[in-house]
Image 1 (cartoon, rainbow, N blue to C red):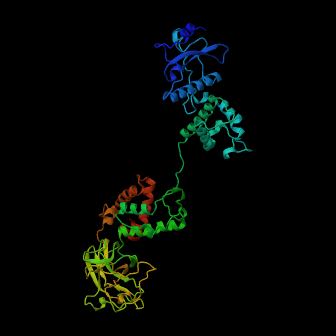
Image 2: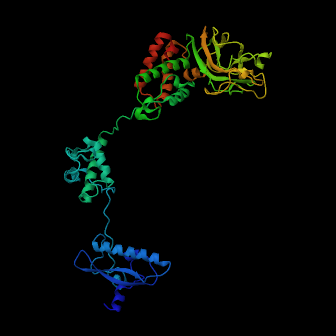
Length: 520
């Protein structure tokens, strides 16, 4: 080939159709030549590549990269991995104008590409079963059991009977993970056919019976239970008083897989339902009971506590639901330290003052009792370090109960309550000048009601009783309206006839024993 022929055959044409040679990046001082490559056929083909003179300086790195890319592509074409132009065609220049460049052959569709719409009966079940028997069974057989799965008895036609295995096979096939690398693979069309047949069988089974099965049992944890009760009944409760911790899940209570319903937990739910329903509706015949609220041993009693009246120090403030109108007794007890008696050992400056220590009991900010603290009380006394009020009449409903010390001094003070068990405070520290020991509240107890006198209107009762029957004949319809409204909110969906019928059966059982409110 002379230089003229080379120029006519391989010169780049500006108006020629772009070819694979346009993938090569242009470099400085580029010239062209033709390289004959042996294709898969006996004909010789021409593939145009750009070969540049070796540049110097900064362009050397770019030149090396372009040269390496061209060499790799030529090797792939020679090996038959990449398709070469058809015999007798050029990719540019004068010959390219007469013979258009060869087009890229259509790419093989990946397994994730959907098949053309075909009828289910036209899918080659035989081909799919042959792939399972000839390829999959090499590893997934009773002897090897690769992946913990054997396909010896697997039939493509009944894939829905082994839906879990069939779904695993579809996922592996669509992801190109099966057959694995290094194993002789059937043609891509065969693999796509197998995946399509399995999918068609699974989809047909789902359309026949679209039932996903039962969801994992999931119940309310303690926090969710408390919030649900507040939303339904406007009643603030501590679910920890009724429901135990989820010890099986290390107290993680939001893992549905381990939310078992043990007998102890079921008993807690039933006890909570019984007590909470009576707190919400009220019970004029309720028997006296005691609720105790603890105060941390390490809580300072020198400053004002949120929720207590201003002008007080220390103490505690709690929200308590009084179940009925009646008389209640409040009890307060104090921590007793080894640093001496309650106010020290009798030699401190506080014992010479004329103003005694007093503690105030208040309901919703209104004082109902004021108790003087005996500076000589001791744990060995018959009543220990406890003080009680006279019976106080209180109406039913949620109330803020506070017990706090009257502040009788201003300025800094030294609270000698032992902050830790390893405190090095001396037992005679209160003898020193300038130290003032303070009484520390240990707990507050509410006992009652004594002589209950009916039920007042409470937020919970207003939330529950949306209607009132005017005659005995209206009680059933009113109860049905109440239960339908509360049940819909509790179930978080409309009640079915069976749901409402079950609730009405409970109402009739209670109403027969104690009337309308007892039934609700």
